[in-house]
Length: 301
Picture 1 (cartoon, rainbow, N blue to C red):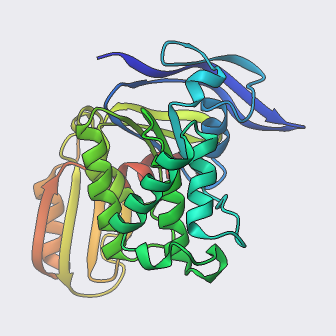
Picture 2 (cartoon, one colour):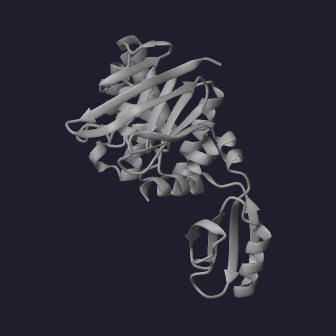
Picture 3 (cartoon, rainbow, N blue to C red):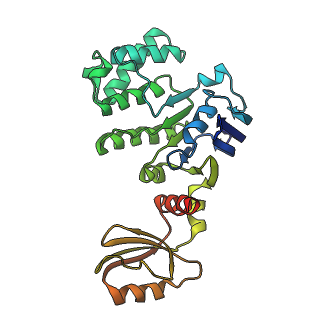
């Protein structure tokens, strides 16, 4: 498996604010790679360096094995977090324009515009101006614009923003299809549930630095089964002062807790049973959301 993108010790600052500091990772061809992190972590700056929108202050970016070039960028599809559509133009004209800018001829751009609007359930809107569409519809058109030229590298910044569960699931199915075709996908999202189901590998960044990076299965297995899901009936604040745990996510009568290194899960079970009526007590590997909270929360603390 080859490498599609390689970032080597890149750094980017805006005046006195450092957005990305000494960041390195590589994307393997044909994988879904999650670039994750809290707001202001440096994800969008990293993406913009990855596809040549901004130049790093130091370090190197290679795409398809070479430094960034105009020819290489013709093989990239980009969905920005902020929409880049022309609001007073029709859906058809937007897609045709963006397709032609990516190297398509006019007839191919029109054909693919029709194919994508039909696939996304928007064929009756193709002659309408973008400003007439709902937020979710505009997001689907932006998604189509990123894919209309059949790119080999697809970079998606918050692709599920503004979508209801049905449309989010539709986009997820398209991404899985693209992965089966061997395309490389970069997914930046706050939706940890989608990232966990779609990604082969992740890079979790915070304050412009790598916190966790690597294959998702390996990262989860390295944590071990030290997270416990608890459903109960009882008083609020269960385990708030327990010496056995070092992280606690409280949803009312449902808890997700992390055991301290060396803590005995059976001792925790006895502690919980003495204070509440249990309907579930399950020891398991952490979810990606738990890893996110655990690692980012620790750094913030």
